[in-house]
Image (tube, rainbow, N blue to C red):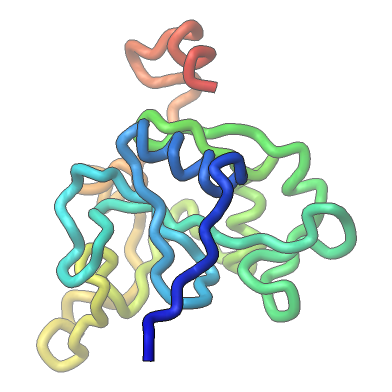
Length: 182
């Protein structure tokens, strides 16, 4: 038996153009499974996650369904998290490591809906895996270190995402710089 190959995509297809733009900006997009619900966006020059082709840190980019009308949902058309359309549209751009990414109109409200009203902004919630190593932690040897939830403020010195947001762009980022990247 031979190896099955995906059909070649036309150079003008949106997928090929998007991949080329990301690649030229120093980023790569990875599918973590054969039929993924998310893609991983990672800087090309970052240290690789052990056993993976992508680097850390990375951003999970979710599939969304219902763009043209009806129920809008995250991750799965049939079993995903429904999201009110006014939370999603009109979309807007946000910056991640200098790269403009499309986001929902009200990203914080969408996260509140996704997490079911949990106080995700003040309580940083982990899960049973390490993103950096893409592995589950050991209940036996590491369980005491991970209770799954911690006040975000307690992690501000270690993780930028745990800090309270400041109004406006970061220091040194002018309107000209932002407009050139949008």
